[in-house]
Length: 61
Image (cartoon, rainbow, N blue to C red; front, side, top):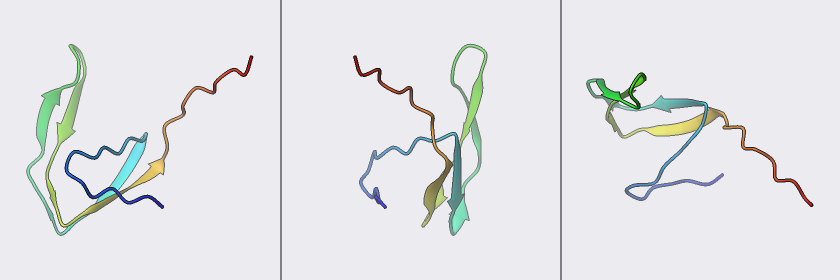
């Protein structure tokens, strides 16, 4: 399993689970004109992907 520990590393998935010692206040932000998202800080925590993103398969021609 790959572990990302550097500043700026990104984890993407349809469903991410996180655990941590302290969870910060949730902030709402605009993802697009009609959709909003939420972000928060997590101290001494870790994430894992529960459901991965379905990537389109390449056609071998």
